Length: 276
Image (cartoon, rainbow, N blue to C red; front, side):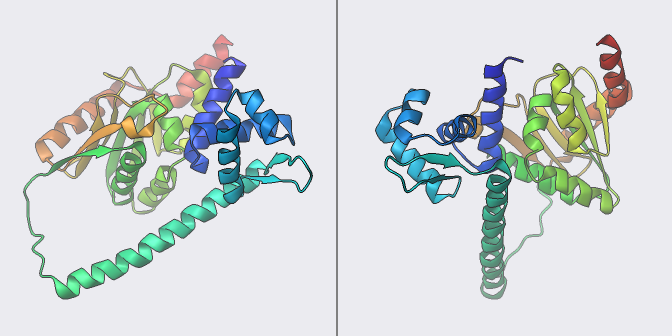
C-alpha cells in the first residue's frame, strides 16, 4: 500500500471515529505530520483557499481537536491522537445521555396520554439510509439476539464496523447466549487485523456471492444491501431491513450454506504467512 493510500485510509477512519469531515481529517493529519504551523502555511500546503482554511481551523479549535498559540502569527497545533479520541468519546457519551433522558420522557408521555395498539404480525420492510443508521440497526439486531446472527460483508465494511458500537454489542449478545458468525472474503491481507479485532464469535472466509452486506437472524430480522458502499460519503449507503420470515429464512439458509463451505480465518492467516 502506497503512502498516499495509507493517508486516504486514515482520513476515512478519522472521519468515522472523530466525527470529522474530509477536510477536517486532512488538516488534523497534516498538523500531526508538520507540527506547529500557521493557518496560512497550512492552506498553502493543502492547496486550500485561506479563508476556508481559517474557518475550518476555527471549527477544530472550538472542538478542541487543535489549539492555537498566542504568538503573532498564530501557530496551529494538533492535540495528541489519544486526547482527540477521548474527546470524541466524551461527546458521544453526552449525546447518548441526552437522547436517553429525552427519549424516556417522550415514552412516558406517550404511555400516559395516548392509547397505542402495537399488536400486529404484519411483516414490515423499510429502507435505511446512511452508514451510521445501518450500523445502528445491525447493532440492535445483535444486542437483542440470544441465538445466532450471521454477518456476511466485505473487509472494508468490517474495518468501518470496527469503529462503531457493533463490537461491543457482540459481547452483549454472547453474554445473553447468542453468537455472531462472520463471513468475509479476504482480498487484502493487511485488513485481516480488523477482522480479528472485530471479535466475532467465529469467523470464516469464503467467496461471497456479491459485494453486499448481510446481517440476519433466523425468524427475526434481516438488514441487507446489494453493495456495501466504498464511497467516502456514508450517506450514499442504503440497506433494506425486514422482519418478513420467508425473506429472512431464505437468506439465513444461504449464510448457513456458505458457512459450511467456508474456511476458518486461522487457516487463511496460516496460508498467507507461509506464502510470505
